[in-house]
Amino acid sequence: MNFANIYKNSIEQPQAFWDGEAKLIDWQQPYSKVLDYSKPPFTQWFIGGKTNLCHNAVDRWVATQGDKAALIAISTETGTEKIYSFKKLQAEVSRMAAIMQTLGVGKGDRVLIYMPMIAEAAFAMLACARIGAIHSVVFGGFAAHSLATRIEDAQPKLIVSADAGSRGGKPIPYKPLLDEAITLSAHKPGKVLLVNRNLAPMNLVEGRDVDYAALRAQHLDSQVPVTWLESNEPSYILYTSGTTGKPKGVQRDVGGYAVALASSMRHIFCGNPGETYFATSDIGWVVGHSYIVYGPLIAGMATIMYEGLPTMPDAGIWWSIVEKYRVTRMFSAPTAVRVLKKQPQEFMQKYDLSSLKTLYLAGEPLDETTSAWISDALGVPIIDNYWQTETGWPILSVAKGLEDMPTKLGSPGVPIPGFNVKLFNETTGEECGANEKGVVMIEGPLPPGCMQTVYGDDARYVSTYWSVLNGKHVYSTFDWGIRDAEGYYFILGRTDDVINVAGHRLGTREIEESISSHANVSEVAVVGVEDKLKGQVAVAFVILKNPAAANTAQAQQALEKEIMGVVDRQLGAVARPARVYFIAQLPKTRSGKLLRRSIQAICEGRDPGDMSSIEDPTSLNQIEGALSS
Ligand code: AMP
Image: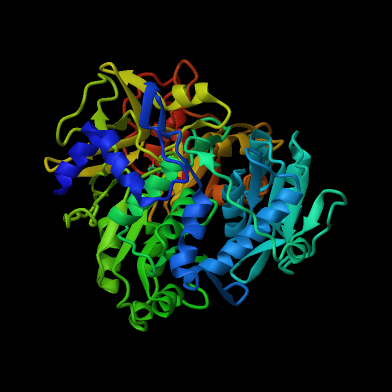
């Protein structure tokens, strides 16, 4: 069957299609029904089936390839490299699971993981999956305030963390941020489990903080059996930014997620057991969940976890890893490639890259120059893929495992089987034809693996993402898109106030709230502005309570630094605006709504658009004036 027919079947007969795909994983108890869409937009997959993510990722492979590499943890920060076979990984995960159980964690309890890219982070995720606890991994680059909001929302019984991460050879202490976050949060975890890497001093809080190495030594021989879970029980929560300051906890299931990952590993990423997969993301993001930890392992592949910069000790580091471990499939982001593009190409030519078959790029728009450059430098095809934290796996791509379809520069490809992608006109609600710009939407039911709900808030899930158009429930991606006559999509940017910095999604509201907490800030607008390297950067326009505090260039610089520092401390350096400008008035509509898109347009040197609703047109001059000062 060709791709078009497979896709058609997946949309017209989802039960039959996913029943077939479900055979890619192990079930302890078969499901009684493939799909329940009786309460749209809520979707349940593989009802009554019992399975386990850790079993499918680890135990399942122990019998057939127990001594083969499963997890390869490389840190150029600490100069360490450890290979865990499936057998060894099973033992470590079992130890971690036993530790969690002795700390009182059981099925349904939340465990927050705030960790650098070390093997123990993967052990912790897999251990949660093993015992039916729900993990919530928080990106290590987030600071106390971001962490506190996530602790408060998920209410973890246990937090797993470490003394420090490391970046560019410099330790980045985690423990003080964690302590501050716990102080800020109304919810307090019962226990905090700490991996001591001896990178930074750590004060242990008595009765709460426990040392991982000491507990591991007590559980060396522990064997914790897998807890079988009904397919629709929650496996994890992963927070993502939206248009309000409060991050949304994307909740995922067990069976549907395992099937979706197994299916995508086969059809899109074309991975085979025994091969090595290298995704350069971080476990704090969705790529880290789907394609560093669970996906490759479910496919029986070895997966590489890399702590370090792409340019240290030199720009050849990734390619030396590809050579050493005979990596076949690699996954990265356009920003990382743009960083490498500034380095001499000889770093790539130094290594034997003959094992590498494909480089997958995702997370942000892939420009043609970057795509062509890296394809040429590596001599392998580049496959763009478009998806979101919410979907958990690619919505658009080309599925070379199903048919050798061509890619098109600038397009992430076509809808992947299971995703009924449609474009709708924002004002009329009508479906768009070829070459007409619209909002990218997915008609329900969403395929397996996508978010089940917003953690603890079904109403927010429905009101944020879903609408009924032409009598059908449709999910909004909040992206603009266009489809050509051959069915290839092109993504044109977000329709909401979410920005994408180096592939990381940030809510401008969150940054604005943080900046507003500075004592001298009266009002602030944050917009995403095009950037050659990072895709977009955040830029802030601030009205001061006391403008005299910024009346010299020097005072402005100092205040700009101070405000950046506030964001660093509260949200983390990822959210730090690239520039902070001080102005006297912000452009708003007569009803007081901030004209962010006009501000953004001016920053990017574009026309600000229809200004008929603006309260005071001179406010735009202020933005222009600030930019040129
Ligand atoms: P996140 O949930 O952090 O993965 O961010 C998802 C958002 O990143 C999407 O809604 C898009 O705006 C953007 N995005 C992800 N992948 C791509 C891609 N391949 N091309 C263009 N934009 C992308």
